[in-house]
Length: 367
Image 1 (cartoon, one colour):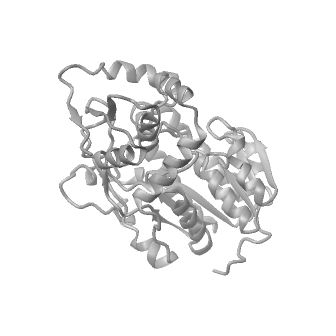
Image 2 (cartoon, rainbow, N blue to C red):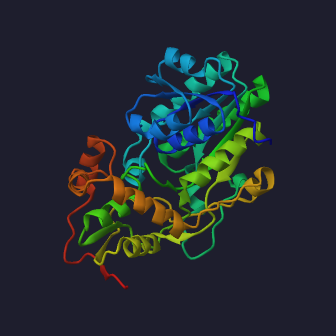
Image 3 (cartoon, rainbow, N blue to C red):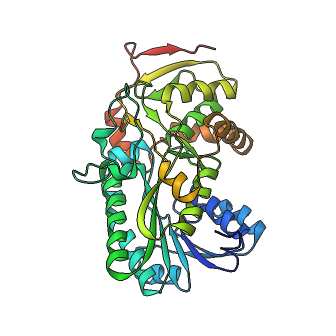
């Protein structure tokens, strides 16, 4: 695809003030697109769009996309709609809250209908590794590379969040097959980077290192495996998918580097220059044990492979976090339960997380 594909093109990004969305908006504006951001700013932040505004003008539509009028306004006149808006959170939220993510079922279909009504050419949907069957992800002792074709009967996605993402993918396939909409679903894997919030695992590790937490609490037994993916790679893969895939099929956008939680913790502490003890909390939500992306389809169709090694992306993210945050504010945030999105979630979680006892496993940091 030519480098001028986006120049002068009208684009809408739902959830565009969020962590991933704001990086995507910056990349699109830099490529010459006219971008409208639709966001209710519950988790997105106006300042996240400062970089995008440095490249060009960004139209902002503040409103709840559950409202059909807001969804219609968001899509009006757009050639491409990047649908990133969602009720989401980290592992604690995915495991302990089902009602919030269930609302994504209506949100996604509302946006898709609005896009169809507005004559939008293409919808790019931000899906998730949570659509993959959990029974494929429970063994940490074998190599796992989740392929796009692994999603199918018997479906067993990750909690209601995964069900909603899967339902949206299937809905887009039906709209494409029966009504001619062009679409693609991008399955993101464990995204991290500047502007990410502390309710996701890697950012929680960085926040704890930042405040000098001692002991250093880690959810699970540390053997869980993830393919953490740096946000710049996510954005690049998403834009290429928007340019090159139109049949509503799904493509993995994720790192192929398998990293255990323990390895992530040790690397975070080493980069941060911290020495502490690690307290493992197997009583806390951990999700699937082994989730790693196979990105052969992205390489073949998009010419895309992740470029950022985990240690390098983590170094960049830590540098950003340490330079932009206040230690006392972060400490108060963590004390207030920042790892859980809403108060109701924190209340439920508090009943499930007894205080660390002498019997809790404590692992000394090995330099």
